[in-house]
Length: 88
Image (cartoon, rainbow, N blue to C red; front, side):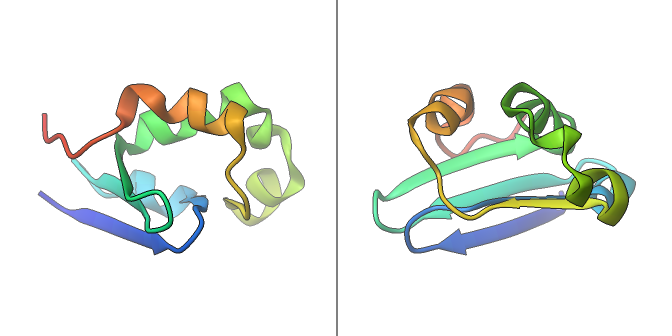
């Protein structure tokens, strides 16, 4: 199973459209400051972007990527169902 590992000190959510081309890819985000791990499929990550309104940004639409430089309470709540290391 392919994994795209993203590690950041305070927390950062980054998704690129090119990840959608990799069958079965898991996106794993590790936030060192809070010692939290989130595991998502590409479709789940895009759903998070959509729920947060990030999918409407020009970065996502034109550049094919989005990076949330800080992770606030709303984004953490949206990511909550994906907390932990899970492989399904």
